[in-house]
Amino acid sequence: MENSKYPKYIFDWMGGLILFAGYIIGSMFVGVVGLAGKFIFKLDFMQKPWFMMFANAVVFCLMIAAFDFLMVRLKTGKKLNFNFSPTNFYTYLLIFPMMLGMMFVGEFITSQIPTTGPFFGDFYEFFENLMAGLTDDPVVMVITAVIMAPIFEEIIFRGIIQKGMINNGVKPWKAILLASVLFGVIHGNPWQFVGATLLGTVLGLVYYKTKSLLLPILLHGFNNLCSAILIFYTKKESFAEAFEMQEWMILAIGIGMFSIFFYLFTFRNKVRYSEI
Image 1 (cartoon, rainbow, N blue to C red):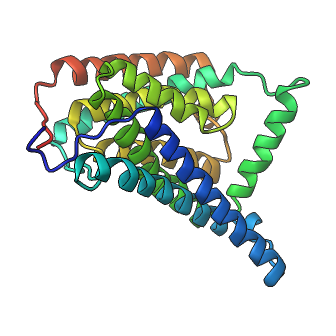
Image 2: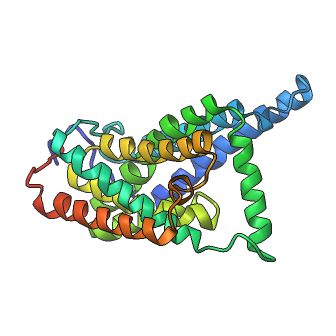
């Protein structure tokens, strides 16, 4: 790693503060632009799907840039850089079914969280209204969810946080778990928290094993694409509803798929990856 073209940066409390500062500055900039549009052009930009896409891009870019200039370049003398190399075809045949299996497991667990009641009912209604606004423009949603979000979020949560913690001496399984929990928390609601945390562990494992950020980006995009297809083409919110199956059947299929392909990928795949 000492001779690698990729910087050996660390992620600690200072790195967390820098990412948070980038988030605050980005959010403030977006807010100013939104207010300017409202008072100067008499347009409420903040309610437009394309503006939300722009806002996400700005915030993520400033977070990454802040960590790059204030942490990586100052400490390593190199710019933030990641390995995006493709892998052998056999690995793809293992990681996508493994991801799909975990998606089924996550759906079942999420379905057990209440959507009614004095707390969950109002929270779920707010969440549903928010998601409905995001789906007003299918093109913008696909660009945001299937392309932009996987790239930016994987750079931050797997590339910066997970890898940075491992470089800082944190055990890989702890780094994968912590990055996944943070990934779940930023989604801001209990229904997405469960799925994002579980799927984050798969994304983290794949990144740790293959050393290529391309693979978790593709898997992340695959998950979001499946969700978009369910919403736009089947008008359903889950695989169980789309396939007209019981949730426990989806769980059983998910556990089976994940277990088989996790074993094959983790213990039987003899390909050794390196980041040089």
